[in-house]
Length: 147
Length: 388
Image 1 (cartoon, each protein chain N blue to C red):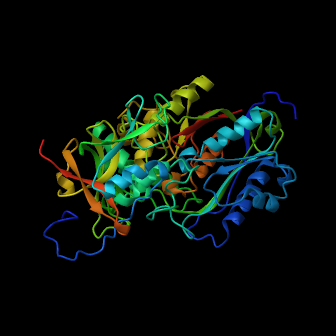
Image 2: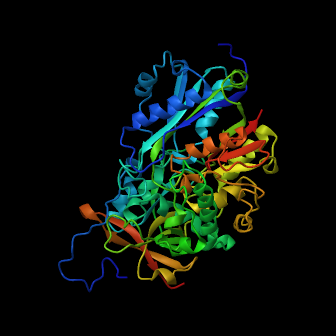
Image 3: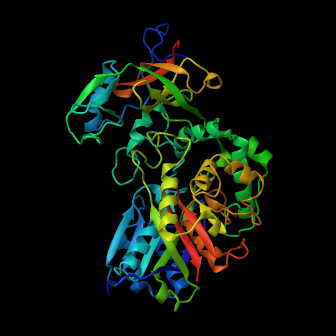
C-alpha cells in the first residue's frame, strides 16, 4: 500500500479523489490547520481540558473560550477495518480505516497507510501525516512509527 | 381528558408485506400499516390523537392524518437516533398515555429502503452534521472511507470481539439462529431459506475482518405501525391487551448512535447498560423475568452486545450462550423469533417490536411456550411487554 504523497510518484499526480471534509463552524480550526499540515486539538482556555469532537462549550467548566493547540501527532491503533463491499467513495483501493487513540487521550477515525491489514495490531504506535482531498484540502492520516 | 396516571398497553399492530420493491409511495405504506394496526385494535382511524415516528421517516404527519381522516391530533413527536431509538417510540407513546395527554397514539415507520434508497450504500454528505438524527459525528468518518452502517458498526464491534475473543464464526451462529426462525415465518423475506454456518463463513466480506454479508440486516421496503392506548380501554378492544410494564431510554455522556467512538470503553455498550439499569429500576424486574427478547440486529455483534448489556449474559459470555442453543425456540431466552431484521425484514426495528407483541399475545408463528413477559431493545431504548 503506497503513501498518498509518495515522493516517487510521477511529477503530475492524478487529482485527489478523496472526499473533502465537511466543515462546520465549530470545527473549522481543525480543517484549516490540516490544510496547512498542522494537527490541531481544541482546548478549554479556562480549565485547559482537551475535547473531541470540537464543540463550542467546555463540558467541564462551561467556558466558551477555547485555544487551538498543536498535538503531538502520535497515537496507537485502537480498532481497524477494511471496507470491502460496497467500495467506499473516494478511494481506488479500499483503505484501512482505524480508530486512533491519541497520546493526548482521545480517539478519532482516520486511515492507516504503509501496512497490510493482516499486520495491524492493537496498540501499534502510529504517527500522523496528511493526505490530499478533492477541493485542495488535506486530512490527517496515520502510518506506523517506531516505539 | 383527566390528567390522571393511566397504565399503557399495546392494542394493535399492523404491517404491509415486506419486499424489495413495494411499488407504491412511502406515505401509502404508512397509511396501509396504520390502518391495519387500527383495524387490529378495533379503533376507528379518526380517533388517533397522538402520532410518533422517527426523525428520518419521510412521511409527513399531516399527510398521514389526511389519509386516515384523523379528526383532532393532540400531539406529534419524532425520535432521533435511527433504529437505535426504535423502542423510544413506545416509550414516548407510553408516557403520553400515562400522563393523560393522549388516548390513541399511533406509532409508524414506513420506508422504501431498498427500491428508493439504500442505507447500506456509501453515505457521503447527507448524514453528517444534520441535527436531530443523533449521528452528528459521522462527518468525522466520511473522508476516511467509513461511509456505511456496516463500517461504523465494525469500528466499535472489533474492540468487543478482541476483548472477549469473539470470532466471526461466533457472529455467524447468531445469523444461523435467526435465519432458522425466518425460515418458518411466512412474512419473512427469507421464509423457507435457512442458512448453515458454512454458508455464513463463505459469504463475502462486507467489512474485513468483522462482518460478512450474512452478518448484515436486509434492506427492505415496508411499513409497521403500533397502536398504544390505556390498559383499561385496551381490555374492551378487539385483541388481548399487551401491558407496557415499563419503557425507557439511556444516552450516557459521550455516546451517540453509530459514530460512537468517543466513550471510554468500546468493548461495552453504555447505552444498553444504562437502559437496562433504568428499565429494571422502573419495573422492579430482572432478566430472568423475561421468556423471550427482541433485540435490534442491524448487525450480528449488536445481538451479543445487547444481550450482555441487558444482563441476559455476563460480559463476553453471549457467544457461548448462543453456541449452546439458548436463543433457539427451546432455549433459555429465544431471541428474534420472527427472524429479526436479518431474517424477516429491516423496518428499522419496528417489526421486532410487533413480534414482541405477538409473543405476549400467543400468536407468533414461532411461538415460545408460556410467555408472560418479553423484553424489546433497540440498544439505546428498551421496553418490557407483559400478558394481562
